[in-house]
Image (cartoon, rainbow, N blue to C red; front, side, top):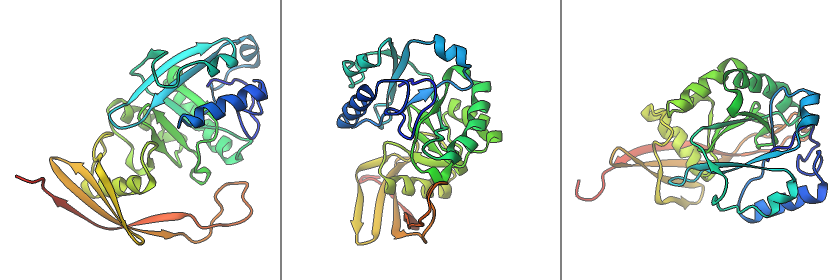
Length: 272
């Protein structure tokens, strides 16, 4: 949802929209299994913000086989409480949207590192570039997501922003900055990252998970991915990192979950 102007620590509760309406929007979205994110245009002047009365909104479906994005607008944020959340309304688009986290009140690193990236993208593609609220993974700032595919990137330097834009247009990812797809569980994202590296794959839709893809035995995981009429089975070991500070504002170090690759092998479907 477009919320112009400054945001507090929580963009929907501490912004120019009514707090009760913002809370209701968040609760409704989360109850439907959606992740609400605030967006705003990069570099809009104060007089432009004051003159703006409408709020653009979008619903993006990043699930495999259901990739889609629809845009609309409302004059009053309360109208968002009546809009269907199933993708049945709004105007469909095939254009990507580049959302860069610049949410300073949530973590100052996101603003310091994110704004140059947003500026570079906005210079190249102003219509499809947005600053956004907290995406998660602050220790990877700059963080950004490309919709509707839900392509998450981290530690993006401004000088490589255009590389992400070009790759997206060509149906590819920038592999060394890529953090995974928002619609997939963490262990599948880790398995895909390892397989992409081993197979030198950078196409967006390559290596999709197969039905019942995940199997766990203790700390060992096996993930089944499809590739060139074969099944790629990736084994990973789940562990915990050394304690680290997860945000710029963090004062207490804590471990985070990690997945270490163990092996990768191919199997052919029956009859081949």
